[in-house]
Image (cartoon, rainbow, N blue to C red):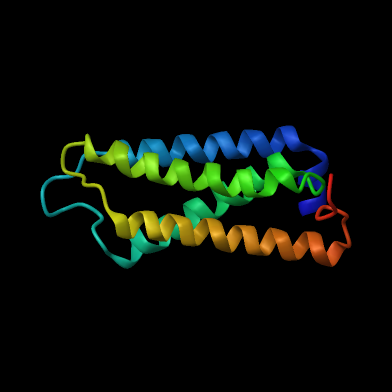
Length: 132
C-alpha cells in the first residue's frame, strides 16, 4: 500500500493537504470555558493520530522512497506545522497554546518517521545513499 502511495505522490499531497486543513479546522473550533478537549484521552489520541498521519503522508509526498535529503525536511516541516497549529489556537477564544500538545504532535510525527524509515529500509530502497 505504501508503495502505491509513493508511486502516486499527487494522492499523497492531496491527503497531506486535507489532513492539514482538518487539523486547522479543529483548532479553530471555539469551546466554552471548561468544556474544551483539555487533556482528555480523546485529545491525546487526536494529537498523536492527526500528526502521525500528517507526518506520514508528508514524508511519502516529499521522499517518495528516494530522496534522503527531503526526509529530515519533511519531519521539520511537520513539526513546524504542529507549532503553528498551537500558535493559531492562542488566538481562538476558549483555546490555549500548549507545549504538551506540541510534544504530542511531535511524538506522532516521529513515530510516523520511524515507521516510514523502517519501511524504506526493509524494502531495500537506496534512499539513504549519499546524493540520493
